[in-house]
Image (cartoon, rainbow, N blue to C red; front, top):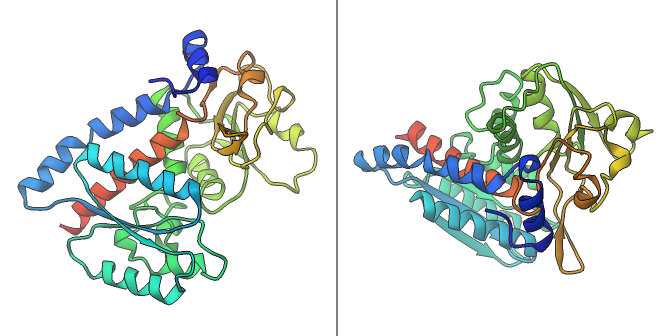
Length: 295
């Protein structure tokens, strides 16, 4: 289904063969989870994910709502714990400890970003590795190197799934990633290398960044800078995965100048309707896996 946005509705119609449809992939992933949920319920296990949200960031509230809707579709129990921006780190740690010890809770997710007075590192480290459905705990993150992490971070793994769904091979390909965050850039780099891609990891201090991106067969942008990737960044036939999401003039925009590069790319993810829906469905998949591991 095309996102409810005139620009992308036109693109889905006119450039159907170029669009990587995240909503289609998400639907396929979710439908594949039904049998696993049913199997768990036959054993008296109801897959459950608890989400901790510190209010104040509008985008975070939207993400959490999308996760709740996905959980409903997958018949997963989703519980949200909302806190004001004044919440203390100790209060969050206490809640995480409570959830860690609750045998009916299989997955724990703390929505980031958190207020400046709270250490995201301390919060993420406090989540049990067996309930770390976001894949951010050091033990799970470290296992990404060997390719046997129980829970891969949702956005990077979602990107891998999207490429596989459209039969876009990464083996032997030049892959450029703009952004080196712990959430997307770093884990995705390793996951692509594990699949024998040649990876170029780029950041704000990279000199002559276009000299790297123009060599890329696959370009992933997670910079959070709307319109950054224009036609001068890519070569003809490049695959563009747009992770960025920003609000500009009341509209959601990605890192890529979608309208400006659509004729040049071979495949591209729209924003919205691209990476986001798949990220959420991977969270549901991780939650079910956590329930299977803890049964």
